[in-house]
Every structure is written in C-alpha cells, then in structure tokens.
Image 1 (cartoon, one colour):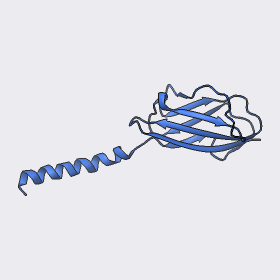
Image 2 (image 1 turned 90 degrees about the vertical axis):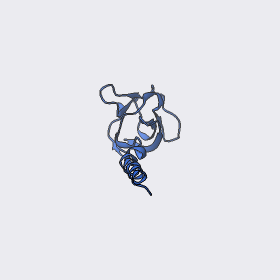
Image 3 (image 1 turned 90 degrees about the horizontal axis):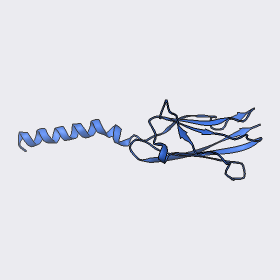
Image 4 (image 1 turned 135 degrees about the vertical axis):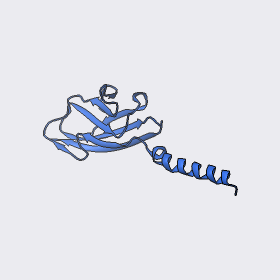
Length: 122
C-alpha cells in the first residue's frame, strides 16, 4: 500500500471513530415529573419530561391515559421556550387513580424514541 493510501485510510478511520458517538446519539429521557412509579398526594398540574438533547416539537407527543387505558383529554404537549430539551403537557384535574404517560420524541437527528411510565394519584 502506498503512503498516500495509508494516510487516507488512517484519516478516514480517525474520522469514523470521532463521529461514531454522535451518530449513535438519540434523544433519551433524563428525568420526568412526576417520576416513574411515583405515588402523589395531589394530582400534578403538568407532566414535564426532560431529555438529553433538543427535541422537535412537531414530532414530539405526550399521551396521558387512565387505569382503564382511556385517553385523558389534554392539549398538545409543547417544547419549553427556554429549554428545547424539555417537553411539557398541561394536565387537567386528575382524580385518584393510576395513570400512564406515553411519550414519543424526535431529536435533532430525526430519529424517534418512545417510552412509557406510570404514576398514581392518591
């Protein structure tokens, strides 16, 4: 192999190694309020999800369902104006019971991620 090809191959490998963590990065949930599995004395006024990167509002949702799996009527979730890594959903007055939060978001790379957790209101 001639020296120029060796240099080009080494440069390409170095670039791939440096770029690989960014290629594998997707929006992932860092924290939730209420927390997964929480039992609350009072119903939350909003659901707040914080991700590890900016998310795209047009492709990001939060769905709230009751213990029977029926959707709870809410407005559309909105990305926080001051921190685009936070997704907020105003919650209506919730009765005592168990609730599920299902979320789906798209990060800056366009890949969708989703998840679900439950919380309980006493």
